[in-house]
Each structure stands twice: as C-alpha cells, then as structure tokens.
Image (tube, rainbow, N blue to C red; front, side):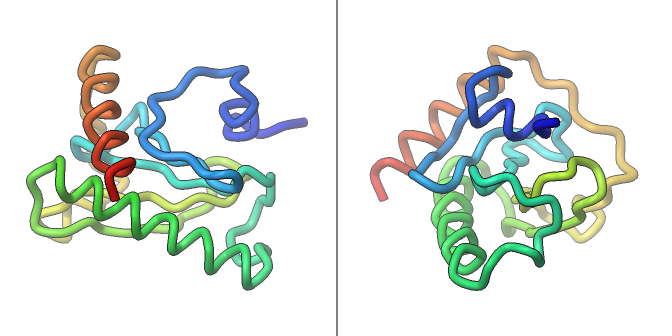
Length: 133
C-alpha cells in the first residue's frame, strides 16, 4: 500500500508545495512545530532514510539545502534545523524546521494551528524564493 507521501506525490492528497524537482518534493507540514516547518521527500517510495542509495541520498540533501535557503529567506529564524526521525510515515523524509532555540525542534511540543490560507500564502512565498535561486 502506498504511503501518504506517495499519495501526495501522485496528487491524490493535496499539499502546500514549496519546491519540486524530477526526483524530490518539499511541502509544508500540516502539523508544524514552527511556521515554515517543511518536509522534503524523495518521490521514490523508500521506507528507511538510510536505505536510499548514496547518490540519490546526496542529491536529496542538496535539494533540501536549496529548500532550506529559500525557507530561511522567507521565515525569520536563527537557523533551519534538520531532523530525520522516520517513525511517523514509512517513507524517507527530512524535516526542515525554522528554529531560534534547540527546544523548537522537540516533536513533543504542541503543533501550531495554521489555517489553510496561511499555509497556502507561506508556501507561495517559499516557492517563489526557491524558484529564484
């Protein structure tokens, strides 16, 4: 059975896309730890992050870096935190989280409640910034 992320890649489930390439997709987390919390995924469904082949993993991280730079330009923050947890969805992914302190990365925090309109506006701004890089 396809993961929820594979369904997003196929367009079966909507998302707020911030960047896309032939092999990778980045979209806003709908339960963000901070404004701009973004998920970066390979379009190829692979459950465990470290099962991605070296070249594909390397290109995923280069794509994530470009997304992080766009995110940083749009969302005021000290840094973009990076987390690979891998337990919540059986599809390799990277969390890019705008942070000002280490505790901003805690997945035990209550997620923000952002409206669909807020997410769409933010996604559009990040997408435009990504497209200009």
